[in-house]
Image (cartoon, rainbow over all chains, first blue to last red; front, side, top):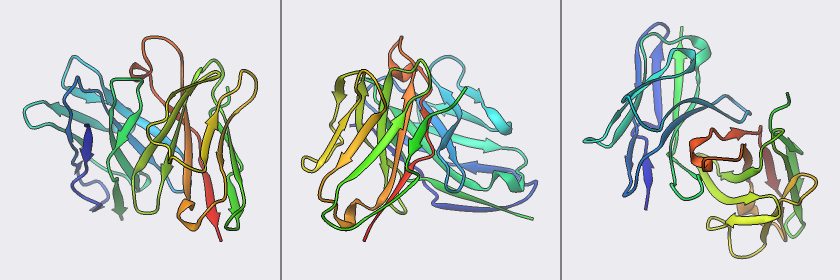
Length: 113
Length: 117
């Protein structure tokens, strides 16, 4: 069975500092990986996705993630965060049959001035 | 070009009542997914539907929960005889047809926050 583990439940960081949100997955099938962001009281918005090809994926809002098959990781990074990046971030893996998403527990990113 | 619509946004029910949550997918989307987010947890898959068909309901509780996506109208998630443990945010997502849903982005609605008193 597929599963996703987000290693940090909360990440506080100062504005303009770099940030990395960690995500590890387990899967016995081909892997399709996603990062979503959820702002308070809103739905989820796709940041980026890995389906195949280049292991470095660039997304919206200056975020990027690197797929590392040997370490079964898909960490999300941003070189310089803004206050507006404060939100909950979810890593997800797609079930190959039908496309349902298996989510991690989420990481709350808190950017402080 | 409206996104995924869910209503109501907030729903309060007393124990034993029924809750009906509605989801209108984006125009042209024929795949609908329902997820539940319990407090302090990530989203958990519940059910995957296409028009008039339930494709995967492996995440649905065996009792009291049902879902449909009729030929016309929104998808409905129905919870009968609600209990306090049903209090959660319920999110609907949709994706377009073709190439298998997992190649396509799932667009999420704003969610319905159900509170059971």
